[in-house]
Image (cartoon, rainbow, N blue to C red; front, side, top):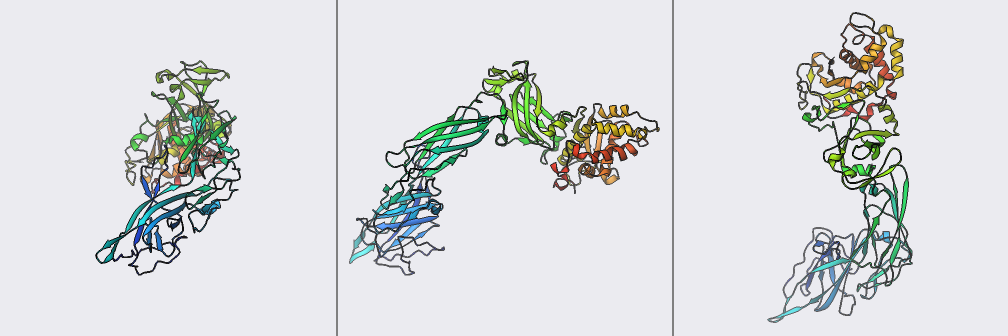
Length: 616
């Protein structure tokens, strides 16, 4: 007899229910060895053809060897190696057998499943409660593999045992149901607030025998389910004559705050083992033809839109005024691109909620009509998305309430578009009060932000995006402040403290006019190594890093800002607007004390002091 060496495993191997004898360390040389390699077969339907086999990895595995009569074979030794997905068997005599394998992926206890010991293949092996009333949490795989043990004759009698090596192909005994949805308008899909399904009476098999036969019947009740966007559920197959029927309820909201509830019936006649069955709902919605881009939070996230002035933005971009420049009275920039995309760029440290975008297009109507609605426009958003106007014919709602149908447009027909914004967000109420906006862009002034020390050049160093964002906050607040009645009152109450470099009184109206006139500033970062903390004059404005980070609460930092603004307004060091009370008493204190009333009312929107890209 040819000696067969026992494989020694490096890991602890599991002894399964139908193979209860311990494997000893001495190889039995009088009995043959069998090795079975387990593979999972893919779903055998059109959605997932069984073109490949994967090694089986189970959370629980049961197996049993039965003879020609279906009786369990006794007095064998076997083990399952989960690392190699192999079953090893010794102790079989010559004859015909079947290997029965039941694999579980997941926790069968969540399904109330009972796995019985088998003495005969006709007996129930796997059983579920009749009142389970829910989909299966785990997946269940089964196979029965015939094989034969033969002994070869040689000189001197039975000299050699033929070893058995065989692949075992495991298939799911369960059926999978996929609930899919087809939408005519992608903004309807992302406006779904809930989807659920309710079922009529339905009967599933509840047991599997060792032979693979299904029997038993559920109690007919299946609880309703909340459905996600890609909802897949596992069930035992339907009993003969049973049909899976029910209703799908879809709830959506639209940009005008109205809810829409729709109900769709469905029927699924077949649910076969190891098959995927698709229940597709074709959603026909009242907003299918709406021109409005309804950007819910999920719709915006799907677009993976970028942001401006972020820490990784190249200096060649954020210091190029053709790419990065804004007016504080129009921080939300709106346009159509040459390709027909709506472009929204937001110079703001804060998010804006509930933003309705309206547009007037000469080629469409003399009226403004709703074109987009954002649940939220993130701070520093840079949004691009193709408008339905250039994709299909659309229904538009004008300001007067009329519904007009607009045929599909060419991108060139969007020329001359004029936009306006409406929002219930209190933040927007503050932004639209900025009447006298200043144009802001950024410059390096010879500095190098890629160097650790900022590449100082004279009194300047390389401004970084973290400072650019702070300048957006500061100038939004400043230009908001200049139109506040309380600010004007402070000036009038302290008119005697407003004087030029020759100590001549300056009228409040002149000061207000200088603060409110149109200006364009090239903003930079001052290098403090030379003892200079700020620079300003004409179109130049700069401050050192601490001032940018602490203007919210530090009256000293704030006075530096107003000192340089005094230079921008044309005043020198002998006036009240630099080293005098306007900068160092009136404006800096008013700014800090009234921060809570400003558009950017907290440093926490930017949290620049902890930004890793600041200068150390």
